[in-house]
Length: 191
Image 1 (cartoon, helix red, strand yellow):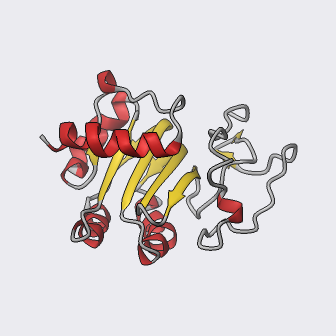
Image 2: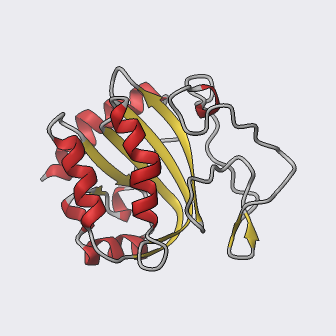
């Protein structure tokens, strides 16, 4: 796990460490000092800790004029025991909503497990952004993680793409990725 780095090809377009609106503004990441873990496994030091015990994130891109953000995730998403969604919503998402972000893409290729509780915070998140035309899209999550999300009813608030609809996003620039989501994926996910 320590070799899995967050996607870094968009750093010329956005860097959360240089964004004064980001909770990670001014963070200095070591390339060699591994301290964060998911259970007993170290994760690459470029991942950011937002307060969850075993789930880390990286803001890959934020555009305040287009109200759009892309977040990559790694680890175990646990709403059942540690209420990760509450921490994520209150401490991370809410400040960005206040700054005008209301279109969120969550990249979940490296989310290994999902343990659900209820859908209250997902519903709240959706209600906070929907009047502005906002949405939450969860892309490229593993099949067993998606199954758990569907069981929890999260699909009522978060647009989930199926494993066979994997989105190849790494070869895109962030602006073309935004356009792809808005013009192609959103209509498919909404039907």
